[in-house]
Image (cartoon, rainbow, N blue to C red; front, side, top):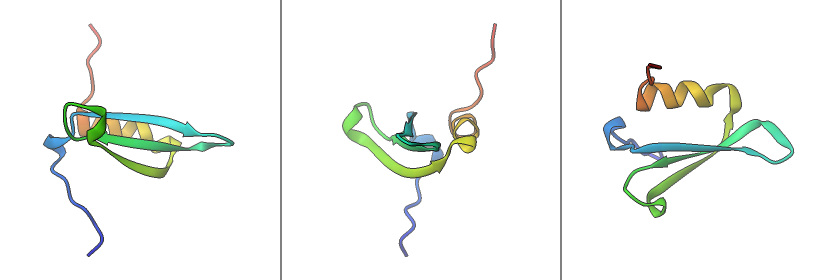
Length: 64
């Protein structure tokens, strides 16, 4: 099986950047530890899903 399964609680942060010349897609990094070296990169994530992924995994921040 090629699918790598991670517990959502192990993801500390999510970072994304648009792909140059393909603004509809992003590169998404799941940070699994305390440093940038622990990032797991996912390529060609549709841009419209990035915020929903962040909210689902990290939880929504409530404005005060």
